[in-house]
Length: 300
Length: 281
View 1 (cartoon, each protein chain N blue to C red):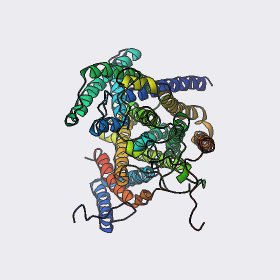
View 2: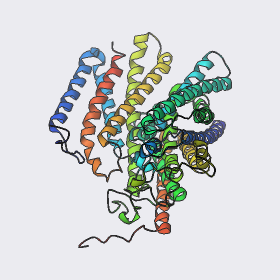
View 3: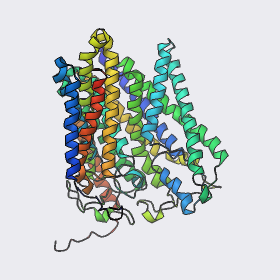
View 4: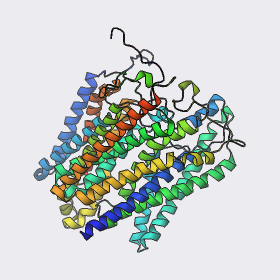
């Protein structure tokens, strides 16, 4: 019983860490335009819309976070092998991983923007200086939380995988969850704030991203400020739910029915999320209604 | 034939010669495994390789179900999840692998099913949150661009597509496709891991002249890394087959799965052979 209570406590802690990691990851990627909307930031100057948006995307979020979390976890593991305190080892490992993220961001922004020279897009040094450090700070929070939850899974819950491998797995899952949930909100809702609310961006409008703020030109800090209100927390809830429910069903129900208990609970949870999703879909259809009158099938 | 004269391959057009070559390659790789393996452990190694091929095929097939819209989905211009095919499948499958590896001691069937459910659960949560952000964050209902009626619910789709787009969000059939993809990918990844782990547990103690408990960290790490690597190989192969985006099982591109199965089987056999060779040579 004591073992299960301890497991539940660790599970709750990892869920909370994952929620913070997801929110920080999405905000970091939005400030750096690392998700799929980077295509619009790159396209805009080619369509004649010069901008001051930061763009450090040379890899998708999942592989990038897989690298940084595996690096942070690997270094922390090495420091722990040198008998350094676990908390200090994790912090040091994540700090070094964040420096790699900083180098990556700098080279990515300079490289991507320099390729737009023939379209007249300048490389802004002030953008490079102010945005890179902000993305590094957010990346540190995301990497630290992810490496810490991996450490808890390994040391406290007894998962067989070594820390660096857990860092790689959960780093990729973190990037996948953050990009899946956060990208539409940044791409459609923020970059195309000049388009109609409640409809997708018409393909003909591609590249016409919003470039001006309330005062002066918009930069990526404004974008991070905006998406941190919904896209970031939603990504955090998504990754937090994934980590928490995966651990929760295992810690509590694994001993029931020689492993089948956790499987049945997992299937039940999938069914519950299916019902919630269907409810959301039907609610949207009823509340927002169709964009056009239903098309009548010929001969129907 | 020039690129201009080449026929577009949007549907499920198959190249019988290429498929035949794929099968021959698969047989050759299995035969190499049989020949290079020590006589007393031939069956075990062949069994491990076949397990890895089956796992790879499950990943390759499962990835076709995952609704991925890429960059257009991030602008609400196309349905699906706004990220890459390989990346999303990897995220789901690796979450499944995490659960499957944890349940390894419970036996093959329980561990593979646990891995499958882990992948399915990850996709269920992600797909639900994607629709949440489309509906409550952006005020956009889900609509498919490839079918007029959702094959599962019967909901009509064209009138819910906003002007100038190919659809948006995740219609119910795409949501279900995502879960099936997560289930198959999670189960496949776990199967590869377990086959390799069993092989390494049996061969490494003799090779390294150590006890099983001493080689376990190395066996788990090596099997885990190979499983992740083979996962990415199969997910990326499928991404090439899909060419960018897919809505799910109702998308015409889904019909291309047979050729991805053959490619995944050959690639998994080659990668699996390398994973086996490190304990043979």
